[in-house]
Amino acid sequence: MSARYRARRRALELLFEAEARNLPEAELIKLRENDEEYPLRPYSREIVDGVVTHRAQLDELISTYAHGWTLERMPRVDRAVLRIGLWEILYNDEVDDPVAIDEAVTLAKEYSTDDSPAFVNALLDRISKLKDTL
Image (cartoon, rainbow, N blue to C red; front, side):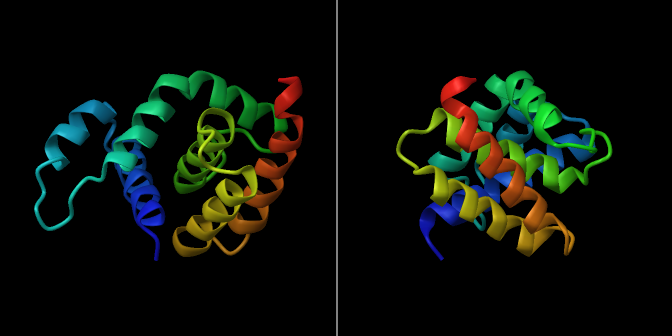
């Protein structure tokens, strides 16, 4: 398991927990940043900060291209996985789009429903192909 995958997984956990507990992500990061047993990696923080900064645009794109699904109807973990994958596709030039999609699908396989990996793959792939026109 790569260091980046572990960082993505930690970012997923933070985004999920913040939403579930209705806490600001910055507050949750402060609570978790000194955890010696489960350290907060710099890339985890970069992902969370990026998702928070661009959440409105990310959610608008997810809502627009998730045919038949509203954000509220999606499982909470799927929303977090999609936000992470989409942030990497749109805002992190160090990660190739196919890698971002594959990593998001892997997170969905590990943490969400049986149908989620295909949904995450299709949605991120669709947006990735359109990103130059967005």
